[in-house]
Amino acid sequence: MRLALLSPIHGQSIDHIARQLENYRVFLAPFELRHYFHVSLESHPDLQSQLSAFAEREGHSVVFAKRSRPTWRACTAYALCELIKTVLSDQHSHDKVLIHTDTDLLVSSDVKKQLIMSKIGCGNRSFRGDKAGWKWSNKAQNDRRIQRFVAEMLDGDSSQLRMGRVCGAHMPWSVFKSFGVIYNAYFDTSHFEKHPQRHWPLTEVAIPTILRLLEGPDQRFRDPLIKVPKTKNVSCKSIDRMIKRRDGFGLKKIARDTDSEAFHYVMHLQAQAAGEA
Image (cartoon, rainbow, N blue to C red; front, side, top):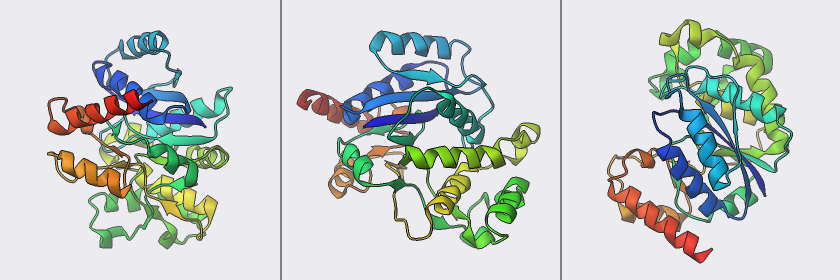
């Protein structure tokens, strides 16, 4: 399988990204991987050149978005805009596209089966506005881009808005091409750049809503491949349970603390998978 991996990256060193590249190579072997990166404006000025040199030295296929735009921990909407442009203008076609972040790590080679067997993986709950108790609801409902999208693409029916986790979201290449055109048509604006205080996790509404629009109400959506830990202290047993249940194939934010028990256990699982390969 030819897999395009899209990720916003941020940092002062390449250590966590280099670690992730090797992690993905081990758990996704023998898939053909091509990584697309957007480097945030706030990153170290040498991050891209250092990462490019590392990727060339270690044999990773890496492409960088030409334009760097601001990102926030809760919002990588602009990064996705630039990644879409980069992927669609690249002279490579893919079988599937995976969207992730730079601090997650895979924990099981079963991720390959999930990518092969499931068409769409993405959070997919109804967006219920203020009733949902989501702290970003007010900003989402007042975002004029969302209002325009609802008016023009959903016939004014805001009940069709969806929301959910998108780290580890995946889709076929054919779907991504249509998805990317729609996303950038509505959300590639300067709104957050002009009004940074108004940022919110736009992708957590835009991605599932557009995918549902494209695929229709009957298409089953699987969960994203990456799970968000409920607590900071992730136990080895909880990772084992996740692998056994196959309700997640990676963990978000796990690479932030390299001294944690969970991180060292993931490295153990990775070494084990590399040895078996």
